[in-house]
Image (cartoon, rainbow, N blue to C red; front, side):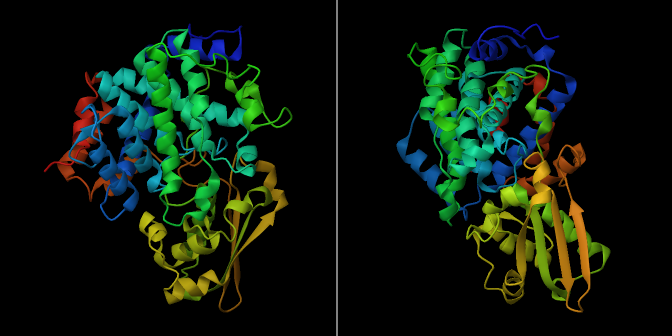
Length: 462
C-alpha cells in the first residue's frame, strides 16, 4: 500500500496528503507507461493546432508576443517564450483545439488538454526533471477527473457549465502545486484559490469559430497555475473547498446530485489516467462509437456514400442534447456522420471549414437522424453506446452497435497506434527528425534532467 495514503481526516486533508507525499517510485508501471503515451498524444494534438490557418492559436500567440513577459516557458509552435501564465493561455487552447486529444468518458473531461500545458509551462519555469513532470501530470489528471465525477458532469452540463474547465482548474492547481513542492498548508490554499477562478460555460456551443471551446482549457490551466504560484508566496485563500460552508458542491451541485466520496475513493490505488480514451476522430467523443459503427457497415458491405439513402444514430436519450441538431459542427451528428460517410474520416479541417455546401454531404445531412434510446441510457455516461442504422438506396437496412469506440480502455489503441497518430499530427509542423526526437524523449522521460530540453523541440525554428 502506498505510504502516501491517508485513511482518516477531511477530504481536503487526504487529497493534500496524497498530492504532497506520493512518490514517483510508488506509481505503478502501467500508470507511468500510460502517462507517457498520453503526453505524446497531447503534444501531437497541440503541434497540429499551431498551423497558421487556425485562428485561435495564432491570435493568442500574437497577443502573448505583444504582452511580453519573462522568457521562461515555451509557446508551442512559435519562436519565442513567455511567462508561464501566458504559455498556459496559448498552449491550453492548443491542447483542445483539434478535438483529437484524450478524454475520460465517465467524467466527461479532457484533462490532458489542461494538465500537459500546465506541467510544461511550470516544469520549464522550475527546470524540473522528467520524473517530477510525469508525477505532476498523473496527479493533476487524477484530481481533474475525480472532481468532475464528484460534482457529477451530467449536472454540470445541464446547468450550462463545462466540466473540463471547472474540474480542470483544480486539477491544474494540483499539478502546478506538486511541481512547486507546496507544503501541507499551501496546498489547500492553492486548491481553494483554484475554485475562486473556476469558470467556463457551454456558451461556446454558439461560437462557430471554434475559438472559445478550447479557450476553456487555457483559462483552467492559467487559473490553476496562478493559484499555485500565489499559495507558494503566502497568499491567503479558502482552506477547505470540499467540506467548507461554501464548498464547491454548494456552488455547482446539490446534495442529491453529487458524490463527494469520488474524491477519495481508491485514492492512490486507482488512477484516472488509466481510464482515459484516445481519440481517432476530431469531433465530440459522443460521436466516435457512431462513426466506428458507420465505417464498419460501409466496409463490411462495400458501401459508398452514394449507396446510402439514410442514416439513423441511436444514442442514450440523456445524452442527445449535445449532438442532435446543434449548429456546432464538431458536435452535430447530422454533420459529422455525413462527412465521415463521404470522406472516410473526420479531421479538424472538416470542423473549422464548413462542408455543408458540398452536394453529397448536404444530401446526407438531410437524411441523418438522431433517436434518443432509453435502453442505451443504462450505460451512459460510463460508455457512449451507439447503434447506427443505414438504409441503402435499394431499401436494404444494415445495423451495427458499438459500445466502446476505438481508443477506449475497453477497445484500446496500442503504443504503435499512438505513435503513428503523433507522427500524422506533427508531420506538417516539424520535420521527421524532430518528431523522432520528441518520441524518443517522451519514452525515456524518467531520464530527462530538465524538461526544457523537451520544450525546445516544440518551438518553431527560424
